[in-house]
Length: 79
Image (tube, rainbow, N blue to C red; front, side):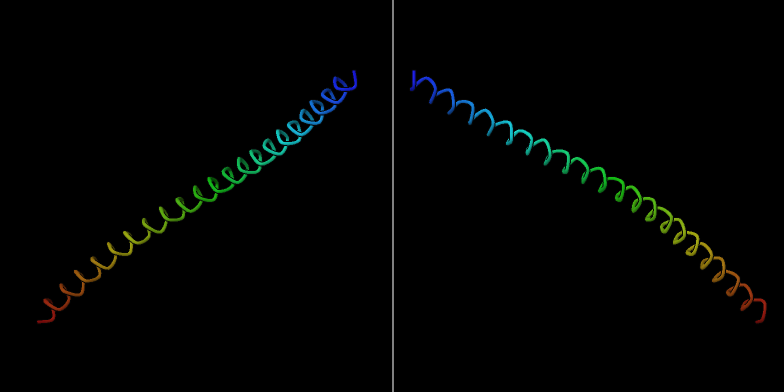
């Protein structure tokens, strides 16, 4: 009977240990999931900013080309 009680206590201790480990894993999973969500949100924001800067860059390049063409035309007109 004593051996049975000891085995039962040991098994109960193992069960409690596994429950704590399970809870710890769930907590880590939740933390990682939250971090992934945060990084995904930040990444989306950065992609949006990059897109805006690329559009501005192309607009500036187009404006530069127009300005260069106008300067070239004015130089020809002056001559």
